[in-house]
View 1 (cartoon, rainbow over the protein chains, first blue to last red):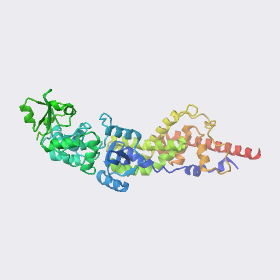
View 2 (view 1 turned 90 degrees about the vertical axis):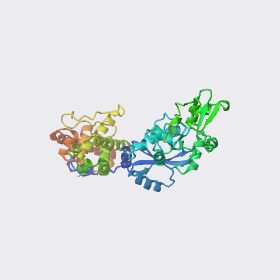
View 3 (view 1 turned 180 degrees about the vertical axis):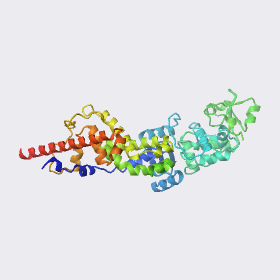
View 4 (view 1 turned 60 degrees about the vertical axis):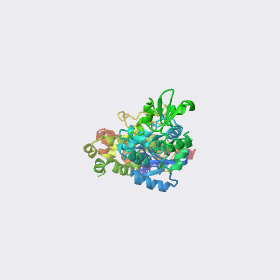
Length: 264
Length: 194
């Protein structure tokens, strides 16, 4: 028997292999044509987070995987594949963000949304943990002071609640208002977990108080501004309008920019 | 057909590229690298790089692409960098320029070949092991031609070498493979008669 009787070609052709099942989904997720999703813990219980190579695309309260996959495809046009867990880096970034660290970078995949919506969401990202701003404040800050209702609608469509803290935007009368992620009770839970004194906020709102002034600095703030919270009872004044404060010689805080709140 | 669709709408047709080429890119990487985990990463990375490259090409350039050799080039580049990153004991440059004269080089990797082939017919696993004993340049040429099934013109594009050169590399690679097979079979006979 010589070496020439060995049939090399068929033996080599038989070395074709089948790609592992995870390969195609991983490629599609990497380039942003599909998403992975997994659960993470939040102050309102386990939530789903979806992400791809471009960033986080959705945060959702759905408990059923199949229901989420269907809704995700309807919203984004992309398939969603379940992952074992949230990747460590993303998980720790989300945890830090929920903890109030606004410097931690979380890339977002907001393709398919309007510039206006993105402006609203990016503005909401500027609101610190433990504070709230009225819808009108967001509208004025993005240069659309009359678009208060559109701001409310954009916040209602926030695809990444908690990561973009739309829960920190409240009704212009100071009441808590609606929340897309499971309703107003969840909004209260999250705000309380972030240290917002809700009973006090609602008490101020119901008596028409919109601003807090300090007679030592002659500055007025939105009630949850960190500067307003530092004012002691002895030095605190309550204003029902910016005009009232200004008439008494107070100026607006440069940090919370309260005059934006009721600009419309 | 696929390139025309890609040129029209990359995002809508890229999944079809992935489905059509994932097995062959994985097979190329697996037979060149020898490790399933490495091969999966290389094939995945190759498809991601292909998407990013396509996203930067204009429609005319995409229409002129020959996807099969183009994708093979991408995965081979990634295999090459993985081979050079490996431990120094294992490291061999995947040079396409320096086939040794005579075409029958000593086995490049003594540690990796199977000690014995148990019959005149070797199993797929044994053939895969024998392939890994070839020098990377010959192994690559043989894998592209006979595992992946590229034509010689496609092979010339994939390796960016004249067709004559790649033909010679395939033939020498096959000759080396026969020699390796013979050596393994001899080893097995000696074991049986010992």
